[in-house]
Length: 120
Length: 290
Image 1 (cartoon, rainbow over the protein chains, first blue to last red):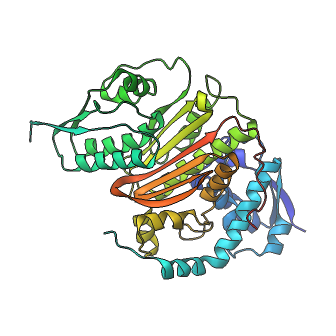
Image 2 (image 1 turned 180 degrees about the horizontal axis):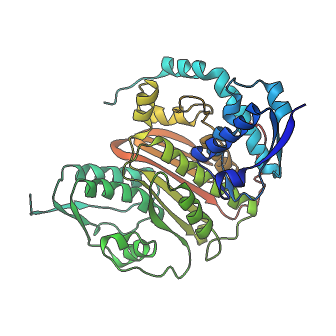
Image 3 (image 1 turned 180 degrees about the vertical axis):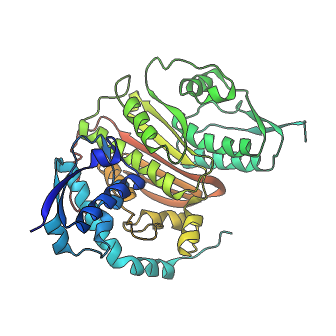
């Protein structure tokens, strides 16, 4: 069983506004660094003022890109100090990431078949 | 250098398809000018929805970027009051007016990396003053929606002239309109550049609205923000409009419209309008649409 470490988003981003993909990337990088050091991560959402999916896609969504399997993430990543609404948003971001990584090629191909263009 | 004064005209501008089409035509009329002094004549404009200052800002910024000097003239007192209160006219040498009713969210121009400044602007201006007392959940979903729109524009538009924002509360109609406009390449060209998919402007908006579709490539997933905004607006019985290039899409309680306007708008605009009196629950569901 891996030792736990608490990562506070507020500290990593340096404030309570969590909206940009770049700030999400900072959180992702810290989570990955902790995993590499064989730590399980408790990610704290305390003190947030603003949070949107663009941030969550980078911070959490990209963990589902295949580098880690679902079992590993279940055992090594937990969320704390998070409201019900934020948890729902987080779950939507995770579900969206799973779909994105599973269906990317299919999405594009489907549109390739239906598109038309008469604009220059 | 051409010192002869040139003139373009602005008519009534509402937050409607025809309002956006008028601004696109204005942009087209300004396109031929370079190093000119151009009069922007408002004498035919008897009403201007304050939130539409954001796309007007895009249109005029393109003209200024072409080294033109713009002189706004013929503005009737009612329109001048609207555009002075939200500080749009200040940039054109007009005096600032006090927003005594506190119903405006002022016109601002941001850089793409101004996300924290933009959040602070929203947090500041959506509190207190004459703005409606919305439920906490409604206020939060509204703010999140506008932030998603801003961050989307910052990430995808390639706008070198910035991102323009403005909001207006209409107390008698219990509606709050907020508009974010960028001066970028538009959704159609972005999809073509990033993914090689070629489609018309209206189809491009439809593509961007599908959950999971994103021009982002690489390891960060996207394509969720607009889907959540759409769910929220439908719940609130509000309205959302997207204009990009020649594409126009609108969602309102009566239905959905996807069409094209005659002239290309030089960027992308998203206008959202919410019903501020709604007291319904805005709880996000972990998964919906299944």
